Image 1 (cartoon, rainbow, N blue to C red):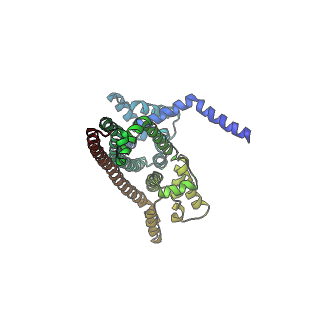
Image 2 (cartoon, rainbow, N blue to C red):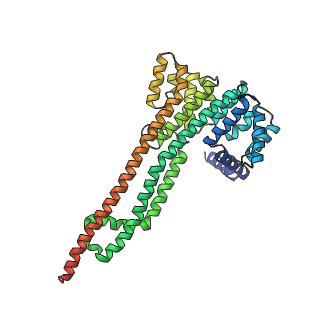
Image 3 (tube, helix red, strand yellow):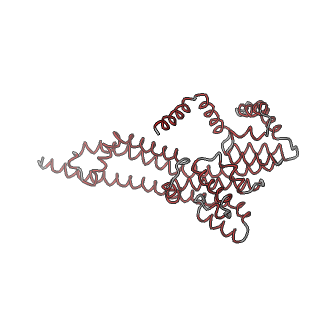
Length: 382
């Protein structure tokens, strides 16, 4: 057992110390972030679709060559990654879509690969473009939804950090701390605690938040299953993954693949958390003879979406259900994002107003105490 533990650790250390592989992985990640974000992929697929479908009908390889030439002429930084793709095609002249695999999400790559095999690359590009556009819209809505609450939270942190200290310094010159009313003492505590320990608390919150975000794609188990259904941010992550997965499956379905083959096309490149759900679906379809409804009911999708799927199944319209499922998931996710954004803005703004009201009332209480204190000094009371 101990030998096995040491062997696992040695493999882990070798992976950490394999600097060339880590540099290559980091370079690929940077290229994906810089040149193949969801919004950029929409434009990329659209350009390739124009080359391959509308009138010209050139091959995907020729379209990539022309895009590379234009990037070189325009001085576009994307020329480097396009050059790498073309160089890969020179050394491995197989299906053109295989050279795009390192830069695309598994679902979109599978759409293109299936269409390329069937000789319908233009249709595959259109499906991948639609999928990337929906993902881009979801990501944009998430960012917009978080912007307002984040700004209010920063304002609240600034008020809690700076205002009590500035006000307390002035008030302490008027009234000794032992004469402060009980209502105002929390402000005194904030002025002493936040400047000395607040940054450590903030750092701890950031570390915990970062850790939660890191394990979202990897943590599995019964506890995670319960959190996925009832608690943020796990429930939002489940809704997001469910929506993007169903977008991919509906696109693969339009490309002519069955549900099981579509699932098999994306399961190997999925994260451990998502792979758990996809493998369960595949198992139910292949080994247990389950219907589409039974296979999809793994906890990945919202209850409303599953209810709609059951209704379609009773009407013998499962194929139509799969095509509409992606849109239903996106609607559910957008509604959830809007609801969470509204309550987050309301909560942060309410907290900000309450802090201002408390500081105002606390200052007023100390001012009244100062008047009594001055009156006592004038009367000779120590």
